[in-house]
Image 1 (cartoon, rainbow, N blue to C red):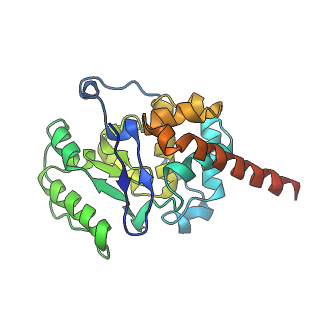
Image 2 (cartoon, rainbow, N blue to C red):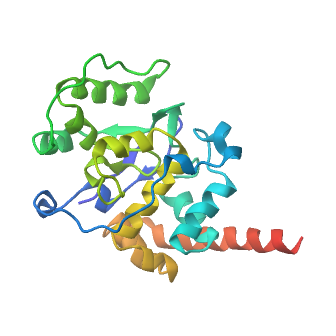
Length: 247
């Protein structure tokens, strides 16, 4: 089963994350074994602070590429395809792109440490259209069950489900939401942790695009051309990197 999310309000990418979106039933019973992952709010370079909600910088890409032990061009290729051409992680400062999924909310709302509702929550100001619609649904669900609502929501430019917080290196779904709301670099850090803990890192190190796309995008990856798009994007970024080095 795959999930395609067409984001409105200028985010015209189809984001399909098999592991992040559609867990097996066994995921409810077994705590996934994950490596300790450095997801760091304080890692944001000083030079990036003014752009942390608007775009990823060269420094951001290099930080995460070095952490994973892959080429910068590899990370750029994956991000450009999986997050869409605009790589948009926020609708407003501190207000990440989200997709509230009622089915996932109903599935996880009674499986959280506390089912308490949040008091005084309001929809962020200034949102319109699809963004306001999704945040309204999330806020309304939070009033009844805050952690369940966060678990049933897909977060950031990579649309990772809140129920995958452990695979993102977080101790709780609330920590994941806090990091998703901090910066696009933290969204990239969470994505990198997810790749590592979901068993996709070796595929990136060897640039096995088909294997990576099969795991990340599901069985229809070939029909949608994810592997060929990533391969082409890698060649483009690598060529640009090589040209810059020779200038």
